[in-house]
Image 1 (cartoon, rainbow, N blue to C red):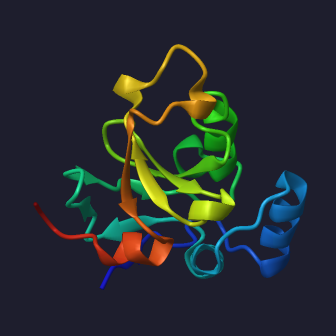
Image 2: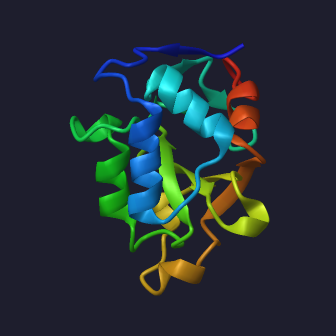
Image 3: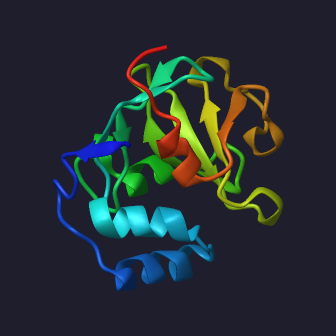
Length: 149
């Protein structure tokens, strides 16, 4: 069972905050992810290792403006032209790589690991060579975390 340390460290959010975010960005977030945001609004998972990519999850972003390291908004702005358009960043590892969530209808909620060292200089919208699928849902993502590989 994954525990979330420092949950709501920068404040709690309401269902209305998520609805506004979805409307403003013309997206629909998966229910399990919305539930996580309402309950935790980000934080540090324990355990925190994703076995399939042998990397950690340093922080799961919350719906906050500051600080940068914890903000889903800041990461969306910074990475919007660097990752495929129907993915958005939900977390990072200690090496600056990202965990992305797909909002595309065919794989909605899928979580992928994105390696920044291998990103393209070209059109990132159709570039997937630096991505590895790690889970089919946010719940599966949290449930697979272990203490060590």
